Amino acid sequence: MNDQHVPVPEDPTIPRSSRRIIVLSAPSGAGKTTIAHRLLEDHPGWKFSVSATTRPRRPNEVDGRDYYFLTVEEFRRRIAHDDLVEWEEIYGNLYGTLKSEVARQLLADEGSRVIFDVDVKGAHAIRNAFPHEAFLIFVAPPSFDELVRRLRSRQTESDESIQRRVERAEMEMGMQNGFDTVIVNDRVDRAVEEIETLLGQ
Ligand code: 5GP
Image 1 (tube, rainbow, N blue to C red):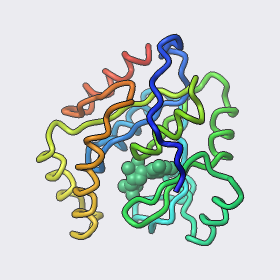
Image 2 (image 1 turned 60 degrees about the vertical axis):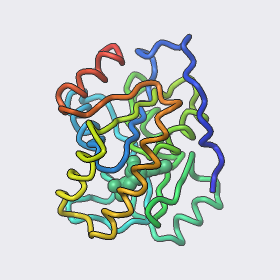
Image 3 (image 1 turned 180 degrees about the vertical axis):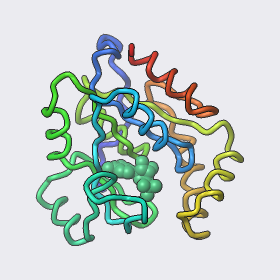
Image 4 (image 1 turned 120 degrees about the vertical axis):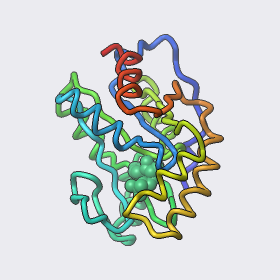
């Protein structure tokens, strides 16, 4: 396991309006993927950092757009080659940010921002890697009950998967420290607006 996820505090001397790496972290079911899509719609120049994973592709997902879907062997090979900024094992699958993806997205357009959708530990690892660029947002559900309700209403997860996500969510809800802001996702429009204001958009 990598050990780069010790929280590093935000450097207040670097204006938030100049940070190009926007990291969204949340317990599963808090709605961060919806928020990420909305931010990308509102700001056509912004990019999405496509992570690598060994989790099976869901029917609505596209390889190279939502994730790079790798075999466990390929993912392990990438770790051995030091190809990843950070990686984690989550719900029994491997997830990680490829160095090549960050370089591709950040260098593609020097003025644009890149959105990362990673777990809470991944967020801190990204701050470690890019201390001047990263802005860390923790997306919280309005309540834990609401989070469980949203997870149950998903059609894509098995009962076992939902149970694992609820258990992990308890741990993640306790890891909000070290994030630059906590946004409560009571309504997507409002949450997106709050983020845009914080980023000076
Ligand atoms: P899901 O299976 O629902 O797509 O994602 C499960 C969890 O993995 C989410 O919390 C998501 O943010 C996280 N995740 C996705 N990509 C990465 C990554 O590259 N690194 C880390 N650390 N977590 C990731």
